[in-house]
Length: 67
Image (cartoon, rainbow, N blue to C red):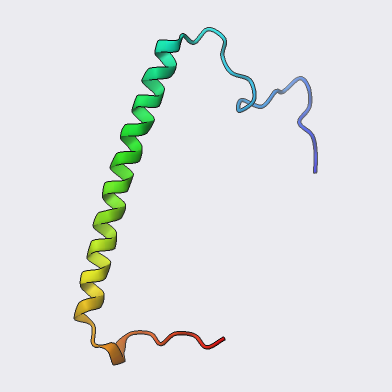
């Protein structure tokens, strides 16, 4: 595994010092909003998938793979 060269620090390890606490609060709020959006989309996909599976007869569903 290679180590990053010292003149190119990783953007993930060096945090911008000029950002205020309010900036961080805003970022966290936006991320939480995005998480809620993604959770809602995931629930919609799971609901749709379960509705589709209910309509497919059992014999047409893919059988479980034996161990």
